[in-house]
Image (cartoon, rainbow, N blue to C red):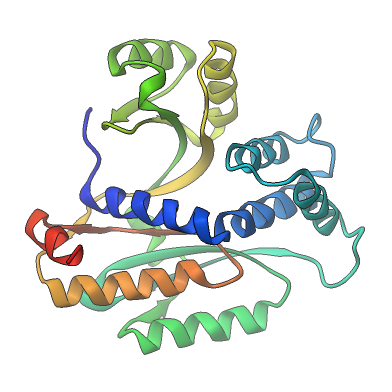
Length: 250
């Protein structure tokens, strides 16, 4: 149960950097807009929107930003409608990528995705040719200091969770996709601070990269995909060998 893979640690470090740079707000705004577009602007009647707003508040996104994102999604601000689209592709050494996006220009986004993959020794793949290698799950993150792993495991399973993984900084509770909101709300009701909750795609067979050159190429591709303005989430089957992880930090 315990222990995250090394790539998850790299992602965690990057997430903290992203927060400093403000990109987290952009990703939250995208998800809020998508949720509002799909189910309306009332969080009381739209579970996905309620979750997106909770995630935004967890990273201290200003109230006015949240309200503007809702209006963007419902069309109150005018302009082209935000659309949800997923791209699949392969990077160096055949590493698989899934990129979830929210965009108001599908043609531009498709062209940009092809360009990013091509310039980084990769290629865009057809729909379904990558995603079958991943499992769709709900993911809830809770600070490790809030509760010990055993106690959380017992509480989470009672709430309907499927698994719990932990390290020194946080616990990750995994659920079936349709149980995410229910489990997250039950954990909140139990007094636990939910740092985030979202749907994720997890690789069934992670690919461990043991070459520092390839690892840097893959990280560069990941960063460019993740930094793209319309990107909401990037998922990959990339993991890093321990000795290579140390080299990447040099």
